[in-house]
Length: 289
Image (cartoon, rainbow, N blue to C red):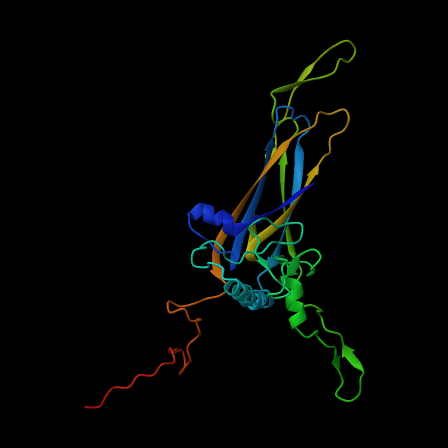
């Protein structure tokens, strides 16, 4: 099994040649995984199942990001970080403790007196010892746990809440791909049976369907963790196979979590007046002559 993570903001920045910030909701339309031989001794072949995990962009996950952003930004200002010159030093999360990189932003959970920077992650438990700031843990501490419903008189519980946490768990989708055993050589030599050595043609099979989802996946910050499971395993009678797997991910659109107008103010919806009409909220009056 192999595992890793993909940052769609980084990959899209390479594609468009511009800085695509991570603080957005990325809509993933489809995923494809393809397997090919990594060496000439590809005697058995491989089928893979890849599980992609991501943090869904919901009301609560976006609210958690908005609440953590000013804390991180204010610390940058207080520590006199050159935010104007550092064009690419924006807020970037890691997925969890095992899947993050050198681009993952840091924060000082103990305030200005704290000298240990903690990595900012989407999932996990906040820990000074492991130097982890978890957005999941941060948001759950700000919210009041849901209480069970009770009768108006007495303490008898009617029903327990359907959920216990506001921050959702990771969501998982799976894609498969196959490259057959004999697809990379013209023929095979059969062992000697009854004093006769024979040859047989090898069959070829390669499957790598595009998995298009009924509705786009709303991926928070464009972070996706993957785990690759390969079958069959090599035995003592077979040569070791090396296979390469390539992912293709279709991103339909991406939308910022924070939205500002040209004046730097947060966009707000205008007030409604009358049926089917919407105005900006500003009122203008003509000057009487």
